[in-house]
Image 1 (spheres, helix red, strand yellow):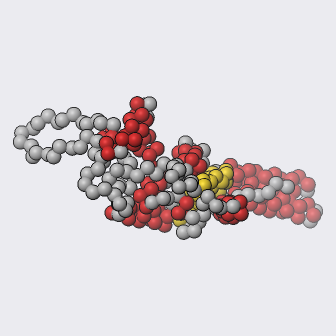
Image 2 (cartoon, rainbow, N blue to C red):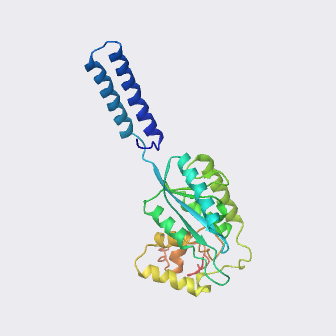
Image 3 (cartoon, rainbow, N blue to C red):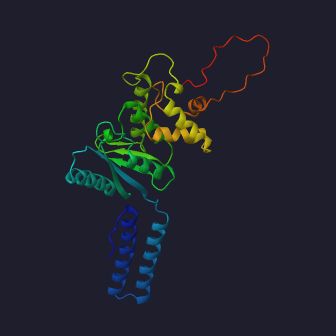
Length: 271
């Protein structure tokens, strides 16, 4: 007999079993066979109807970020915790992927996390599950950007250690609180004054390449946020307007209507 995985499966099986048992009792008490068969058929129809209206299970991807000296036991423990959470919350766990902390001097671009976010972004999965929230963020700004990305409908982030689930009201409230902290607390050591993308030519060149390849301003902002690229001025996340300034676009001046209050000249590449 197939294993029953979800609440809808259990309810459908209970309906069928209830009517089938009633039919057997009717037959055992001397009732006609056709009536027993009718009970069983009715139970089957009700069970199929329950399955047809069942809410599809959300697909989840597990993610782990471990140190360079972590062994297989650490990964196995995190995998088990994620699998247990998915099973108890009716999630279809697609896979558990992981990144390893790079050696000193090597870039930490987290390819596994980027892959997981891409899968969720295109709708192949809806939930990212981590055992510890710290596996996602190298800084408060980076973590805040991810939480903002998960605020879109049909995306959810689960951090088992904190009991955080952004698909719930309590989870969304906690995520908003973290974002608020990041807004007023720029990264330690952030430069003073109005920094600009031009101060980081490698980043400016990368944004220009993406723009020339036909990516929209929103798509570029989403890519930078997903990869945890910090904004130049210490904001919580990249926005289309900041990307727009990075590619050197300025809106055409408005026609003058009477006397206008002088405005300060905007920085073309400032963020």
